[in-house]
Length: 254
Image 1 (tube, rainbow, N blue to C red):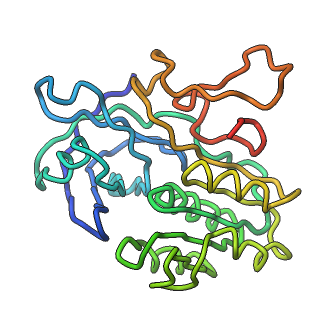
Image 2 (image 1 turned 60 degrees about the vertical axis):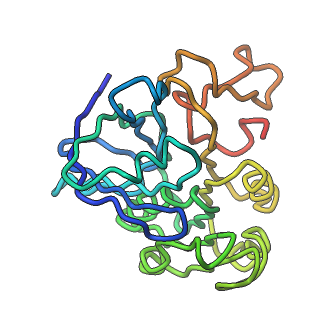
Image 3 (image 1 turned 90 degrees about the horizontal axis):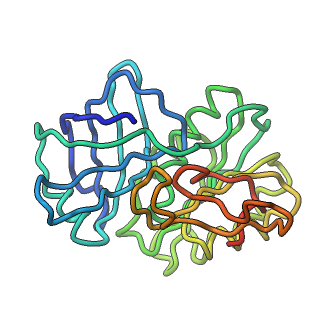
């Protein structure tokens, strides 16, 4: 098990309740879609680590970027950590997006705090020659982040629920715009969004990354199990933390 103690290089807000955390973590092997499990504090106030997806990793500098949202006391505590402080984490953990036989063109579809892992994926796909296009969904303009970064990867549509930025509606409202020109898709976000995305993509092959509460992050506690769609599957379930969080579309009962 890989346990790291890394210095915080940056921990600043980039949108409403959303922070960018940059750690100095050299010599990691990171696949897009993997996550780290962060230990909070030194006492027993936060007995469980927090799983946070990896948004970017630069091997040359060893900079590991995490984009996270304050959703409870644990992430609020992380947001209070200052630059120069060391933080302990496990990882990288889980199975990321497969980068074998990548499509000629790919659509990245992210919702809210499900967007971060798609950024490193988009960078890798671009390096491998894939034409990258994106749909990013937020509740409001105040919660939007990393727009310029995704626009640098390729054509990007921004969608907000209230229309305060970009197009108004849901990400699936704009899938049809790209359908004639893409050969694969990758998505991450809340489960209802993943259900809608999977249905809207029809026969286009793709992968989804599932957001699920985790206890241990290493497959020991069974807190994050999901049922599979194949009733002949002898196992009958998958652990999101170790079998995923990335799965081929159609494998899980969402």
